[in-house]
Length: 159
Image (tube, rainbow, N blue to C red; front, side, top):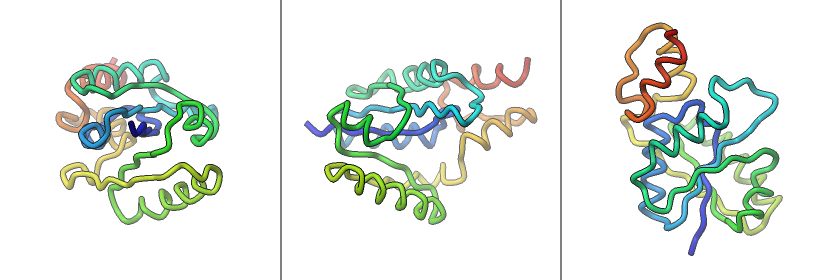
């Protein structure tokens, strides 16, 4: 069985992320969505909230698990006995950064491979930062985040 990991901050998980998760789950039996804990960043949502958002949004997907990690992705992969990283690409500008990360991971762990999935064209403009900015200014985020978490995201900024 191939075990793969889709790492990210998911602050919050978007419909674009969910599209990548769904497609990865259709290709692989075991997909772990791993929320990065980065002490140098101030996320809008706690790790626990982000994990809950992902769990609720993927409840209908067999083989999808949610976890968190800090430190190097390759160390997390080794601990989970996983060797395939899933990354989504929205545009060419994403590729340069993602390619560098994939190359570094391959240097650090020879058995770690990265697969890039192109984001659905309907989500190519979407980012977590954009969702937060939009909801902060009262914009409609329908379709930009999974329905299961939409009210939670709105309530964070419209209290």
